[in-house]
Amino acid sequence: LHLLKRVEKMGLNQDQGKNVIAYSGGVDSSLVAAAVFKVFPENSTCVIGRSAAHSKACSHLAMGCFFQGHYQPRLQMYL
Image 1 (cartoon, helix red, strand yellow):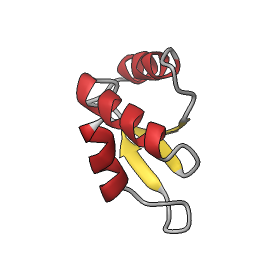
Image 2: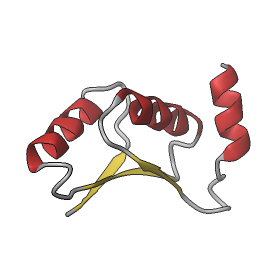
Image 3: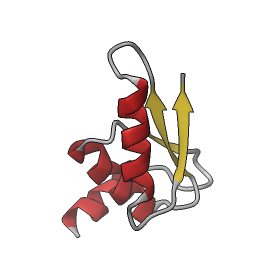
C-alpha cells in the first residue's frame, strides 16, 4: 500500500503524459511495472531494449514472464 501511494505521487496522470517503465524481466523491474500499471493502467507502457548484452533468448523469457502475470499491460521491444 505504501509503495502504491509513492507511485501515485511520482507518476503521471493521463492528462500529464505517459509512464514508461524499463523492463528487464527481473524482480525489480517486474515490481515497478506491476505497481505502475496498478496505479496508472491507461497511460503506462513497458519497454525492453535488446543488445549484445541482453540476448534474444533473455528478451523472449522476459516477455513470457511479463504476460504470465495478472496484468496485461502494453509491452514494446526495441531491437
